[in-house]
Image (cartoon, rainbow over all chains, first blue to last red; front, side, top):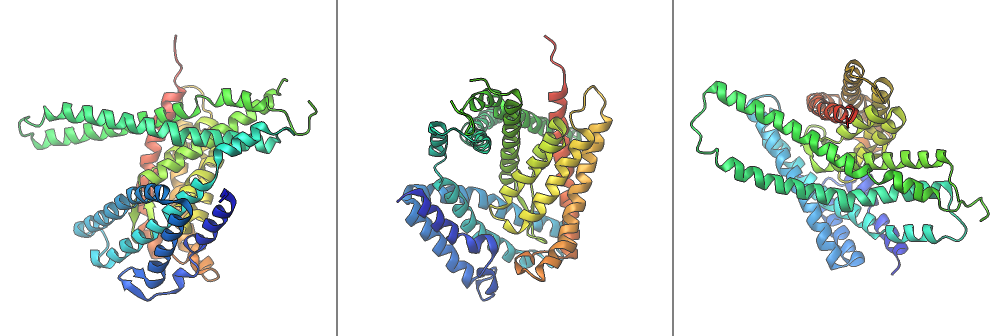
Length: 239
Length: 182
């Protein structure tokens, strides 16, 4: 099957996820936070993705969804529980909010695989190839689209994986370097405050470094690509 | 065939918008801490919107804010796309207008720009969640996710998000604005 009917099918399937119709109209719950409509839609959407994209793609999409959803759900519930314990808010207790996280979990596990599949079904590489091979020339808008596509693919497939690898390696180094400090004597309150302050400064410094690395790696080829794309024959011009 | 320099420049700008919008998208989806009162979430995607405004000016800052974080909202939080696109678009534009392409060592403009960005982030979401969304919800139930009380609960997380993002964006700006001596 070509990408067009698959794209259309996934787009139609995702309408309830992105508009709330008609799934948000039903309020009868299977468990607290999950209505029958959402439970059914979750099953239908995931089955559709499995059918349209195949087992291999579905497995990857489900893994990505779980990786994004689980921290959101667990960190969110932990934060709201801590706020409740500290007396800063959420006076009704965690039980009043736990259904929100169950609902969030089911909606994210439906929406994320759909979004990943819609992006995954688009043949970006052949879009680029078709534009480059076009005998009639390329319009200005198509050139902009080509540039956007190249940068987006470059960041998603090259920049992010290499940055994640750097984080992993630096984390390993820090863990091994930090293990020698675990036997340090107990610190006074002043010492603990100083160490926390240093940790916070280091965290901010690391995040700035990560941001700079990400920007540099993302924009480094843009001038070359701009010259290359601009030299494609214009649609209006005769060669 | 020779290409016009202005076309190359336009393509470079499109590339920069794409790069920062993608980074803002990734920054928004990687760190997500939900705020149960509103169904919204804390994230650090603003860093790249603010940095784009400071480094490249209002047009690029505004477009990055309009595209990147809104795309991230499409994954899991579609009801916030409208508010995010408008608030972060305005945020990037204003930061670019006040502190964009600042030369020299003066910190007044970048700091004022980032402060204005934080105010727009916090105030903008508050206006959307307390006034605009409840109004829209009367006609489209899809927007019925917040009210004034929930909007109040999101002020502190949004303020924190704005401050943390501004600190990182300021650091990024400092690195790129320093002259390299050979």
